[in-house]
Image 1 (cartoon, rainbow over the protein chains, first blue to last red):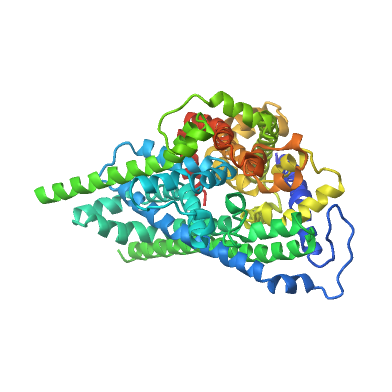
Image 2: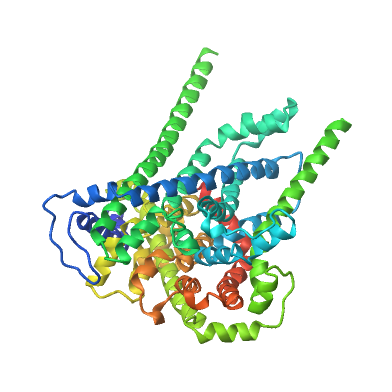
Length: 320
Length: 281
């Protein structure tokens, strides 16, 4: 019997081999390769040979001093914020409504299905669809606005910087608020229902229950939504690229579109694109470690709390 | 008491109104798209919003397929890549999760911490190195670089591990051992069927994610007979379709249609899966 348990350990290693190999080859190696390219002179279509630069951080210096790159980082942040604030507010409002026991909203399933739907449609398709919808001079959005008397002459949305940014942010918002809502509802359903019952018996109002009980208990899930949305938002590519190719006047140029343009168009500056990728990589790393530690801390805190409760109970028992 | 009831009713009316508006907001852009796919460019120029179809589907199709847009090829390529990637991800993630749950080995905890740490790192930021590597080994314009990396999908291993921890009893494994089943055989014949519900949920999301992915295919697939659906779609943004409104809407509709079918068939599982994914932490 003892022999057997010793033998089985090797299967743990054996069954992990495919994962580890694939990770080393397809994830770790390209990551290190990108790091290396960032310090070289690699550029030009179809080139694979390179030599290291005499001044190793030259690419980084050039990228950080490139106003277009800084602009693209700024745009990414702006568009993400313009999408996230309304997204999380609407998701929270819908969560409060759908989980409220007094309202008992019917047809929740159908509403969820409709609201989540845009999330699974190809982003490339949605970008081009919205490009067509907001067309000038004859596009559905212009036509509707004129029909309802909101504007008199068709507007050239694609030429207005803030409108273009607004539309990209709206698309992101529209595609993702349903996702955030479902995640938050799942979080609320995980809260101990006796808390709500007790609050109701005590005569708490719906807003009171939401702000005093639901929200504080959603902290970790909100952090999860925030961090995953930030990481996703930093990589925003399909929509800004296909909606207006990053225009007008680079107003919707995001960091990912910038990197793509550097590496795969014009003079194929793989080295500078790599340096820019690494800067993004570091930003993402910072965000995900915040998440990693927050979750770890929560577990530790929970364990400590349990321990304290246990000790208290034991002391009580001892005193009795 | 009555005032409380009235205020509840007012709020309920507000809730239903908002929800119906949001549902319309979700469907309306697609509705316009489907309708305009059947209307001529002239009709669209006269009035771009129509709630009813017209009779120009055939002529729009002729214009669309007469140019570079070939949805059949895009569909086939996307199908091969997404199916391959999904199978790899689901099978090997389950295997890795099983290794983490069923066996006690020295590096197990370290390995799991590693998986948690790299879970959030996206493939896109290392795209340049990935492209250079694939270019060097001649894998540009092949399906491999879009399928094989999903053998290592940390987030799915994490999810599968949580599922196994909750649903696997090691007694089953032990009794299989007594019956003389080899470890690998036990995994394939006994463990995989137990994991089916988790595998199904994860498979839907991996498939849709792979199907919709644009960045990595766009840099790797430059030959038009290898284009995936999203790359095919991006052609509709080109100059050759500038004035062919009806055909552009038709092309977009063709890419949305399969996803609509999948979504409305599986929406129950998809929504449940999103909720489950959130609770994994």
